[in-house]
Amino acid sequence: MTISIWQSNPSDNPPVREVDVLIIGAGLVGCAAAYFVRQMGRSATITDMRDIALGASGRNAGFMITGPDTYYHHAIERYGHAAAREVWTISERTHAFWKSIARQDGGVSIDECGSFLLAESADEARELQQAARALHADGIDAVFHDRDPFGRGYYAAIEQPWDAAVQPVQLAQAVFRASGAELIANNEVYAIDPIGPECVRVASYRCVFQARKVLICANAYAPRLDPYFTGKVIPTRGQCLVTEPLPEPILRGCGYSDYGYMYYRMTFDNRLLIGGARKNFRAMEHDTTDDRTTAEVQGALEAYLRARFPEAADTPIARRWAGIMGFSADGLPLVGSLPGKPDVAFAVGFHGHGLALGAATAERAADWLINGADPGVLNAARLDR
Image (cartoon, rainbow, N blue to C red; front, side, top):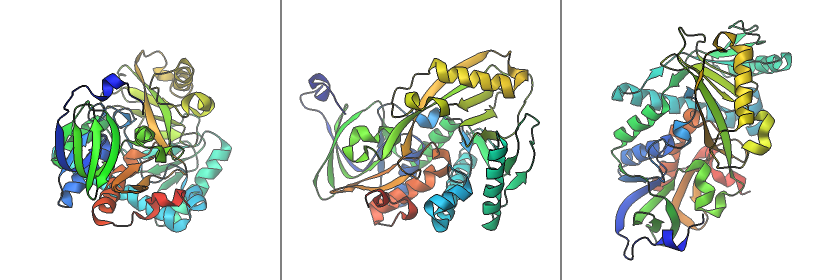
C-alpha cells in the first residue's frame, strides 16, 4: 500500500485505541469472524476502509451454492478425495450458519429455491454427468437432469434443491448485529507491526490500534496489507447487470453455467440479474482492483440475456456494477498467520465463493488465531511448501 506523507499523519497525536481482537474487513467473512471470536470468549473490533458489505460481499449475485468452485469430480482430482469432501462440509457448515442468522434476525431476504448448474455444450453435459456420479458416490443427493430443465437450449443440469438465493448486504448486516462487535468504518489500514507478544500496532486513518490479535479478512485487498499475499491472492473483477422489474418471474432457482463463468437469478423484486462473462476477457478482468464496469463484459452479458432470456430482451437495464474478488493461487481459501507474526492471522482467497465457504472459514481462522487449532484443508502452509 502506498500513502502520501499528508495522509499518513493527519493528526500530530493520533488517538491510540486498545482492542482485544482487531478484524480488518467488514464483509461477510469479517463479520462472521467477529461472531466466532465472541463465541470463543474474546471481544472483536472490526475496521474497514469503507463500511459493511461495500466490497465484494455486497456486489455478488447472492448465490448460496454448496460445494467448491469447480465440478466435484475435478475437485477430487485436484485436491484429493478427502480434501474435496472436507470442502463440501465447510460449505454445508457455512450455509447452516447463514440460514441460522437469517432466521434469528428476521431482516434478511432469503429464498431456498435451489440451484441449477447448467451445461452450455455436449462436452459440459458429459462433465456434469461425471460430477453427479462423484456427488452420488459420496452420498450427496444432487439431481442430475439429462436435458434442459428450463427449455432454454442448455444440454443438462445438476440441481441442488437445498441451495438458496439471498440479499447479501442484508445478510452481512445481520451477521454484524449478531456478532456484538464494534465497527470503525471508513478507516483504511496503513501498516500492521507486531511490537511484542500479543501486542500488534495497526496504523489506520482514524487512529492507531494496539491489538492483542489481528485477523485480516480483506480478501482481494490483502496484498495491499502485506507482501506475503502477493501471488497467493489475486484480485479479479466480476461484473453484473440487472433489469427493471419484469411482469412475472422467468427463472427459478440460482442458475449458473459455462463452468461457472455465467450466472443468473431473479431478484426479490422480480428483476433478472446476470453476471459473469469474464472468461473471454481474462487480461482485462484479472489482477485488478479497478471496480468500474467495462463495455466489453457488459456487452457480453447483454448478448447472453438476449440469447437465453429473449422475453426480457426489451426490458431496460436498471443497473450495472463490478466487484473485486480475491482468487487464491489454488482455488481454496487461505487460513494461517503471517510469517514471523503469530498474532496476525488471515482468512482470505475465496475464489468468488465466499457465500459458499466464508462463515466456516472465518470460524477456522478464529480458532487458529485464538486456540491454535489446525485449519485443515484451508491451511495456507500448503502454498509455502
